[in-house]
Image 1: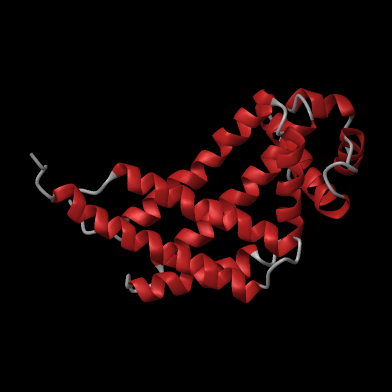
Image 2: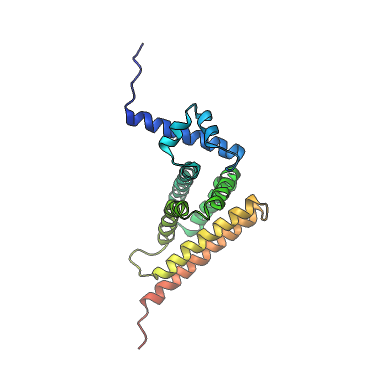
Length: 217
């Protein structure tokens, strides 16, 4: 019988942290953010409450880690879906639409958790700052995806790019909220999202001409 590997302190702590995140995800999704306590998460993970506080200062930090992991997986799948196309705008938009319908609109528990978390930290400056920092990856991914549609080496308006990124992301957030509150259907939200992406791609294309036009005297 092979001897069981003895974990280092760092490995043991990393394992504990992973188990706590997985337990928190299960309880947050099943019972909701506000109804889930750190004690319940510790019990679900088979750990002590002290183990929780050794890894996370408070419930908000643990919830943010759950959402960060969920978001990273979704972004990775979006990038993979777009990379699998032939590069045409039509196929890329179709990939985005399929990702939205199969990867986002089927994740009500995660979307509701994100909304609960957002409301809970809106008055907490430090936690709000942490949430903004975590969201920067979504913003950067949006920049990359939009720029990928432009001809290499072209000059575009940075202001229009930022408007495009936040315009698309803001629309997506609103549509996600509308979905979980049953204000809109999946088909309608998909259509609106793709129309928004197309609008900002056109606007970015127009900004190339604007940026390259000679300055007026």
